[in-house]
Length: 83
Image (cartoon, rainbow, N blue to C red; front, side):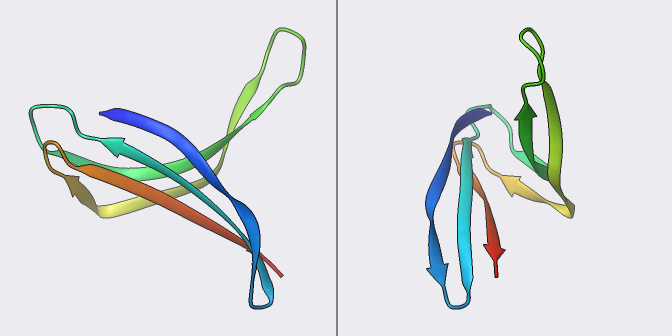
C-alpha cells in the first residue's frame, strides 16, 4: 500500500452546520487484493521538547471489509459538522 497525503478542505457553512472535510487516499501497489477492515483518524500531541504522543480520536471498523483490488485506489473521508 502506498499512502497519499492527508487533504483537509477549508471549513465551509453547509445549512446550519460548519463542516470540515478530511480525506486520505491509498493506492494498492502490491501484487494481491487487500481487504481494509478498519480506518481511523489520529492527532499528535506535542507535550515536551523531545516527545510527542498520538491519539486515535475516530475509529471505524468495517465488518465485511472493503476490498481494494491490485492497482486500485481507496479513499477515506471524514466530515465533521459543528452546529
